[in-house]
Image (cartoon, rainbow over all chains, first blue to last red; front, top):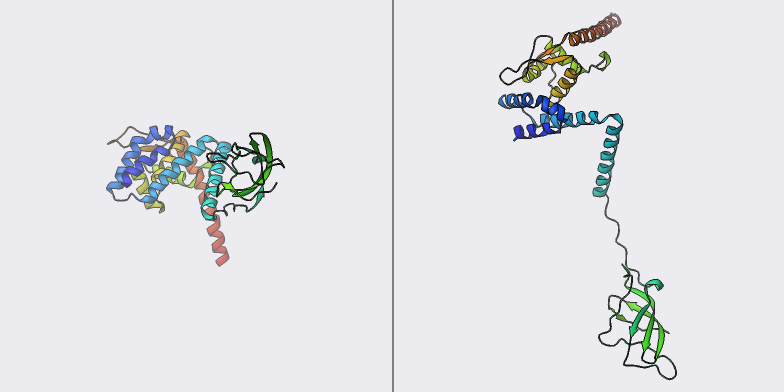
Length: 172
Length: 102
C-alpha cells in the first residue's frame, strides 16, 4: 500500500524531475520497502518535495500567488465549517409589496352594483392568482387588485396570505 | 548554485559522495550513519536534481537498475569551502567556550 502510494506521489514532482529519476526513485522505494523502512512520513515527504519543486518552477511571484490563493481558500472553507449557519430569513408578518402586487382577476358572474363596486372581490372558481415576481420569505402582503367585471372595473386593496392562497378580508 | 545557497542537506549529500559514488538508498544510509540525519526520498531526489543541474553531482551508468551518483570537481571545491567555513566557525566557537569556562 505504502509502496504504491509512494510511487504515485512521485507524480507530484515536476515532469522533468520525474522523467529523470523515475526508475532510480522506484528502486529506492523498493529498497526502503525491502528493508521495512518505508514510513508514511516518507510518503508525506515525497508529496511535499514534489509540490515544493513545482512551486519553485513557477517562480517566486506566481508561486507566492498560488500559495496565497490556496491559503485563502483554506481559510474560507475552514470558516465555513466552523461558523454556525446564519439564521434563515424570518417570514415578515405584514409587508407591503406594491411593485409585486398588481394582479388582475376576472370575475364574470358578478357585476358592480349600481352604487359602485361590491364590497369584496370574490374569485370565481377556476380563477388563478399569480403574483409576479414571486415574493420569497413573505407570507402576507398587501396589494392592489383590479377586478374587471362584465360592465366595469373595480380596484381593491387586498391583504393576501400566500400560505392560504386566498383572499382575506379586504378594504377598498 | 553559489556557496551561500548550498543547503545543509545538499552539503550532507556532497559529503557522503565525497567518500565515493553511491546510489539513493546507500546515500540515505550513509548520511544517517555519519550525520544522524535521515533524508526522506523526496528530499533526496529534490536535492540531487538541484545538485545535478548545478553541475555539483553527476550520475554514472546504472548498476543493477540503480543510478550511482558521484561528486564533480566543482562540487568537491564547493564542499571544501563550505566545510572549511563551518570548521572555522566551530573552532572559534569552541575556543571561546573554552576561554569562557577557564
